[in-house]
Amino acid sequence: MKKSLKKQMIVVFVGLIVFVLAVVFAVNSCFLEKYYIANKQGDLAAMYESLEEAIEEGNISDSSVQSDLSMLSERANISAMVVAREDIQDGEVMPTFMTAREDNNRLFLQLLGYVYGKNQNQTQVIGTTDTYEIQETSDPVSRTKYIELWGTMSDSNYYFLMRSPLESIQESAEIANRFLIYIGSAAVLFSVLAVWYFAKKITRPILELVALSQKMAGLDFEAKYSSGGSDEIGILGANFNTMSTALETTISELKSANFELQKDIEKKDKLEAMRTEFLGNVSHELKTPIALIQGYAEGLKEGVNDDPESREFYCDVIMDEANKMNQMVKNLLTLNQLEFGEDDTQFARFDVTAIISGVLQSLDILIRQADATVEFVDCGPTFVWADEFKTEQVIRNYLTNAIHHAGNEKRIEVRLARQENHVRISVFNSGMPIPEEDIPKLWDKFYKVDKAHTREYGGNGIGLSIVKAIMESFHQQYGVKNFDNGVEFWFELDTK
Image 1 (spheres, rainbow, N blue to C red):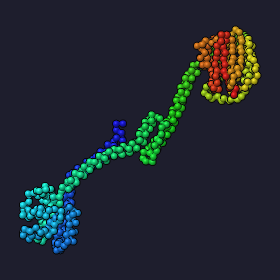
Image 2 (cartoon, helix red, strand yellow):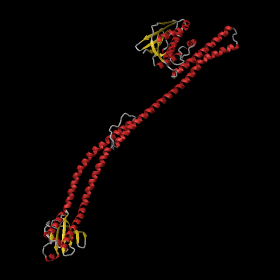
Image 3 (tube, one colour):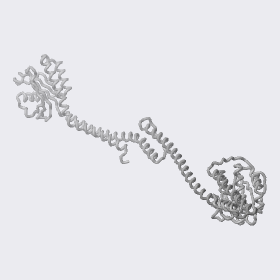
């Protein structure tokens, strides 16, 4: 990361330390000496007041007073000399008070030069009062800079000179600056390491939050903030976890709602398509019987044939076509209930062998009219789990279909094949195989392979659609298989 928080923290803190050290270095170089001089002026003034007090009290020659004054000058690094006015006039070097820090003659000669105005070009006056001057000067012999205070005591009977060297403060400033450089370098190095460590400690949970936010942006809510903590970052991480959970729940609810909405839209589209298809198919299927009923009814009304036999034939045709229409409507209602889940499925355990035998018995008239033979070996009770009424519908549709398509051999075979957890019921009829391209369409509503033959026996192409809807409601397998000499329809039911 080009602008990582860790780098910014290191740069800011190290820059701050370097800036502070630079300011201290500059202040130390430029203002320490001035501060020292100002402070030293106070020391010189305090020494002056102590001397004047001793002179006024007349005890300056006492050893105890001189000892105290010497200690005061020693602490303040001040050299001092007090000389009576008459001693200077007599040319004697007999100072009333003098510290032991410097050569007496040099200090006395310096004082004489000030008294007679011969050292003025070597001094720079800092301040004056009625009794003394404060000045900076340079010793012509040792070339040492001093800050001096000289003048007379308040009674004007004594001259005095006090001075303190400035070389020590300059040297101290240089030493302090070198010390700051060493200490500053060590401080910068230590601060870099310390800031790097603490920045890493601080930025680690932040980087974790960054990674977590990126995953959340990609709708990945599995990752959670795990660093913990009770500080602001820890609270933020806990809020991230709460937000992640809330978003996951909300998005799941939105997906569920969207899925349900999509299902409703698909169902609506399917209903619309089915409605359109239903209207088209029903219109097509009803067109022929309605036309026949209308034609024969008009013939009866107009008396085309007045003999009783013809009238009875006309009435039989009308009744037959009306019956076909009634049966088609019933089948459509049954199929509609199955497809939309409105039909109640009651699962129960029953003997499917008995159901097959009952259906065969009820269809015996149709079998004899078709001059067909049915082979069914009763192999004993076979219990299955399914809806008994709907299972009977499937068997009846298969057998009715087989009777009408038995071909020249007129042979029908019904078999039960028991397997581990289910049984397969198959109905075979002799005749021509179904064209392979028509097999996938057999289960569609109103689809007929041989329309003329289907019309002949009153079929409407709904029976196999009912079989498909029933078996799908059972969640069981079903299908059709071609043979060289016929066709076999089959379905399976659970035995456990």
